[in-house]
Length: 423
Image (cartoon, rainbow, N blue to C red; front, side, top):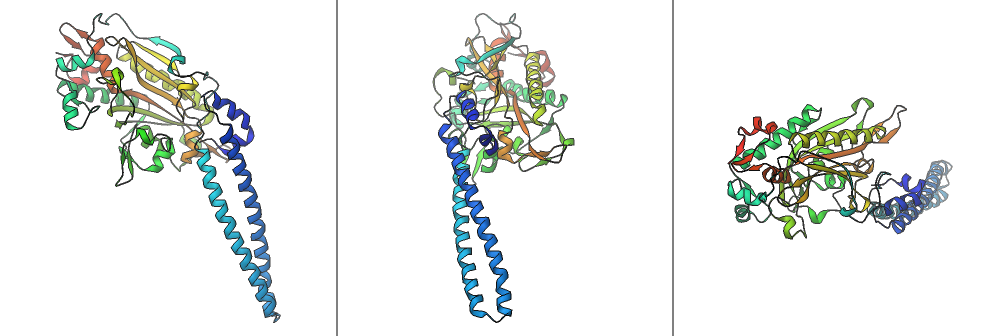
């Protein structure tokens, strides 16, 4: 979340920047400042009462030694009254601080200066296009038909076992899933990312730390009996490894990668955009996460974008990179680059990765800090990216690499699949 200092230093700047996200922050910003002023006033009054209590309490012993018992009792009574008033002030301060925090978490992260205003996806900036087109079939079948034709993904069986959005991968389809996960992890670890295997359920503190709570409860699966949430992305548990951590200068950068299944309710999704693998409730994804000093985070972001692009290129798929406009930027992100693959059959772009810099927004919620060269405590910057989300990669591989004799497996995947064709 945004820091109080950020709001104090230039409230109008915060209001103007959040307007780029189409968020009217004026009322919340000035409510926060009003609550902060009240907090300071309560603190000043509480400190004054505490000092007076100490002063009077020190007099009691002397009065008792002088035999002035009645006067000592009067002073004790006054001390008691001051203590009761102090307790009342503490209760007011607790209520005030709770409301202040509730208001702060309503404010999204400010977009960085590279982010342009816009209403939604239609206003995103295409910053690069790449990938070959020579092998793209002219009359490609959609991946859900190919999945049935080759008996590699069973959507109906998934409905039987669980419900819509929970496919069953079979035979070479299951092997392709495993191959992609292993290839993506190996690709990331070769670039210096340390592999971790986190839990796929997290507590509320973890959800709050990365900003999924209280913003995205409706999108997360909740296990009520244990008060756990199924992870919507590995970003949540992996970034929370650093919750309440203080790093030293020698600890940077932190580079982690992880595979997890991801669970998303996708409430309100319907129509052709959810057909086949386009939008699932459970899917596999490999993630990369970085913790950086503020001065290095944008260079790290560029490295992450280049890393994901190299990975996409290795699969031989047509892609484009978008810089999201303010209206399409997530609640927590300061800047995001999306990668999309071209679906030869559906004739549209499919998102497979988001690479984002959250600057200090998540770190403030996580209490993730480091000591700078002067020993002063500073907030870290957090970044993450999909490297990659599997469903739409599989969809594009099936549609783009289909031939008359079967679906060709890209060369880089063959050591992982153990076969060069799905037929």
